[in-house]
View 1: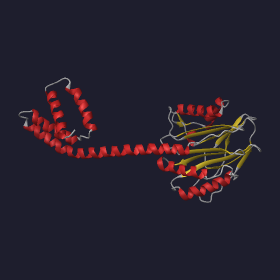
View 2: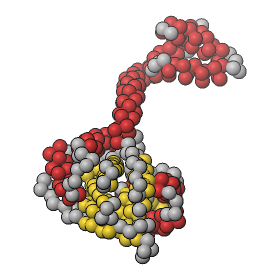
View 3: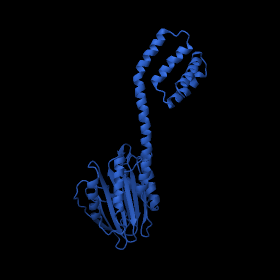
View 4: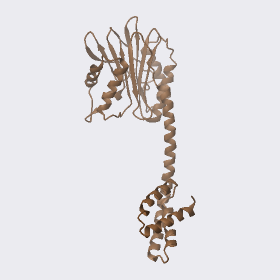
Length: 332
């Protein structure tokens, strides 16, 4: 519709409204929505009203006409702001579409897979708090060793997501049959991150390897949230402590390696801080509360176990996450 058809529709409806047509009010709401959809600005609408009034009134009151003319002058600034607002909305819609596409691409890139494993039952769940995730996990079974990685970037939004994608490619460059120690893997990744990631961001990572022949689980950590180790023989949980600087903080960081013997029935649980920073009644939950939830369901298969823990923790926060959530369970 061009300006003239706009004016004709508006004029006819205004005439009916002035004549107290009962249906004119409802129709005016629909016309308002139509004008909004077609980009009629506030100052255009005031001008249209003045033209329509001159056409339907034989002798319009001079004060009324002058007041509307004054209103048009006042609305000119609003009209400019309105057009800018519409343009920004259009750009935002386009940006949202692009972010949705980027989020789908990132999901496809970072989506972890749980391999079949004859000596361990493994489950993993990872849920982004927003469209793009800053968490990453990777589990590889090459037939001789089980390698598990879990990482979290300290940063938000698209830059953080892009950095985590870079880490994914760095991890994929490590051959599945690589016999490198966890400490050396983290040291090499640290140099990659330090050279390529903005200084305002850094990455925490836990890297562990299980050898089914020796039953030894070796691991190193780059400032990552401690996991849990469950000893069946002692029937108790302990923190899977491993210390080390986050990736990207210092170019020559060294990482200490820890090792423990795994007995049948033992379990290892790895997580990001989106798990431990769940809030209940405005306070962060204690790690003991997470252990209690795990204890209730640790008889379940690992895939069901991780989803049940996620559900229970999500329920505490009224079914939403403030941070990316990643949780891995390995039952030996």
